[in-house]
Amino acid sequence: MTTTDSNPSQQPIRPGPRFMLSHPAHFIAQGFGSGLSPVMPGTFGTLFAWLSYVVMTTRWPEIFTPLNWLVIIAAGFVVGVWTCQTTGRHLHAPDHASMVWDEIIAFWLVLVLVTPASLSAQFGAFVVFRFFDMVKPPPIAYFDRHFKGGFGVMWDDIVAAFYTLLLLAAWRLI
Image (tube, rainbow, N blue to C red; front, top):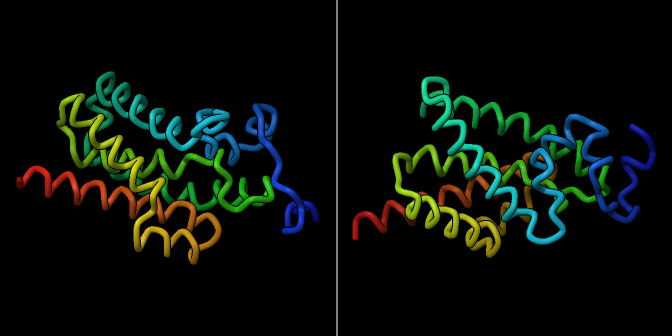
C-alpha cells in the first residue's frame, strides 16, 4: 500500500476504464464496467445484475440453479467486502458511486428469491430495490453511516434487498 492509498485527505479520483482495468478488485467492484456510467451508476449496476441473472439463468439453467445462485451470492458477498475495501481505498472514497458490486450481489439475491417471476414482477422488484437503495430508510441509513469499509458497502445493500423481499411478500398477501 502506498501513502496515497491510505491518505484520507486526498480528493476522490474519477475512475475510468484504465483505473477499472488496473486491478482485479476494481474490475469486480465497478461491476465489470457498469459502475463507470456518468449518471446513476447504481442503477446501471442493478440493470447489469438483472440482465446477467436472466442471461445466465436462461442460457445455463442446469448450472445457475437457485441453490448455486445462493452459493455464488454468498461467495460474491465475501469477495465484495475485499474488492470494495480495496477499490474504495484506491479511489480515496470508501463508498464511491462507481462501486456497484454491492448492488449486483443484492439484486441477484432479490431475483433468486422471487424467481420464477414475470418480467413485470422483476421490473417491480427492480424499482422497489432501487427505491430502498437510494432512500435508505432506517436501519439502512444507520448501517450506511456506521458500518465502514468493504463490509459496510456490501451490507446496506443486503438490507435493501431484505426490505425489497419483505415488501414483495407483503404485496403477494394483499
